[in-house]
Length: 118
Image (cartoon, rainbow, N blue to C red):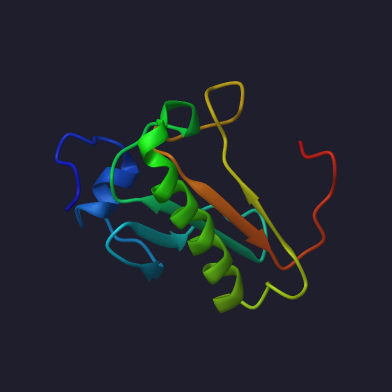
């Protein structure tokens, strides 16, 4: 069940208030296509439970965090980029580029990723 107090855009997606192009969902997580993709494959993986960012996760969140990373791998396989390679990124805080205060992982693939990132 989505947190009624999560006023982020991801909270609205989880509550069904705004649409999203879902590619995966289970009891703990949801994955959907980014509306401003930075690669051919750009899917966001979020927990159903509101955690502001990785910096706000606590020790009891370890099973959920592991599950979210596994979902990233499942999404990469479903999107056809598991064999060619993909990147998983989470941004933390303003300087880290976090734009939504709800933990989320970007699964990016379908093109060569450069290093260092921007």
